[in-house]
Image (cartoon, rainbow, N blue to C red; front, side, top):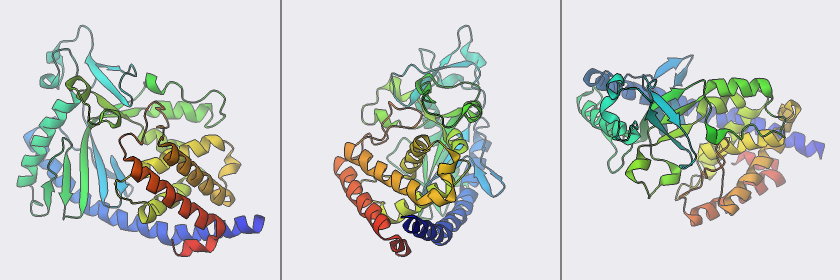
Length: 359
């Protein structure tokens, strides 16, 4: 048994050094190319409208504010200034979303975003996005990369197609620090020792983002009030939780397996599902020794089996917001074929570690 475990860890490390590192290098090259174009477009936007200031910056070879959705798909978060005159209201009526309401006694004119405030005093995510979309469309026509970049049509999101190969979504957002959403109040679970009080305090201080984008839970049934809502996002908090042990390596293997074998019609699975299941696995195995390099095979198998279970139940709760189902709106047939394909993958890895050479 121990020999089989050791063999699997050896093969996984080989897989990580060859396949995962090659994936990372290719994506890093793409990011450089994509960010040149996006920065140029955003510079042009800023000239037209100084309230939209580009916050895309490179820090130690990492681009702050950029998220890799898939090897050819990215999201850039554009942080907006001056949320101060608004109250954050999160009553759970819209899973995964919250609204920003003008604070009592504050005049609209005190806000930098006055023309995007609705009659009832809410700062409309949709109105800001719509204005931003118009500005980006104009910037695309003027920027120096206009021959290789164009807007993606038929969506309320701001998406660019670059060199006919890459898609980048640019999402206006506010950073919220020093508060924690009520809809995430159940975290951390009182009976689970991970991640421990110090890390919890760090994560909560890290805060979260409010994004202006279409919300999972509202797909296909958006009323205007709901489309004024902002989507909660916990990227930095999640990354902080995944520090230490073989957690990041495990995520890298999961992403590589997904890119190579689970990129299926109907797009049932993305890298965020993998990250979410890894966080749940951290709760199931709270001790640091459970995340030693020698346990990589066990952790990976546990996550793949949990993924199959979620796909079969057609439900994958968001880690911080359990009322939000990350499979919402995914076609059942796509989830079913993903379950079968994940099972084939897991069985292959479990029964024959050497199969990783071919995966």
